[in-house]
Image (cartoon, rainbow, N blue to C red):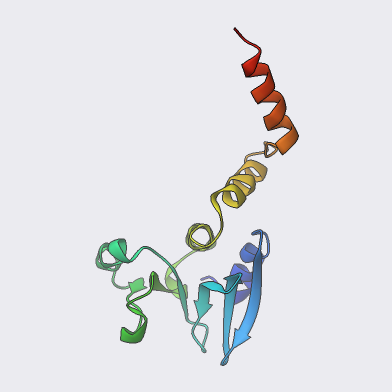
Length: 136
């Protein structure tokens, strides 16, 4: 079973991510965009997920995943019961939701740090483009 503290430890590693407490609920944001929110009893984690894929996700395992309340159906949002996921699956869901909120270059830099590669700097990109231009 995953807890809010488990998700907090995941979200704290994500660039531009921060935690807020709104109307009795823990939420994680990038800018003003919420990408993860917990129910008041912390039994359900709602997270960003493409609207066009959420019905298939919920249908794939209705004991684990659930649609958001009717007022939130207009958003890219779905829920998961925390007692039905492990830390590894929660990590994948949280990071995927975070990716929906950050620029591609931020996600790419995060991926580079996780794979052990350094993200290319503007100086290294400039060197590569100059070296390509001199070939000839």
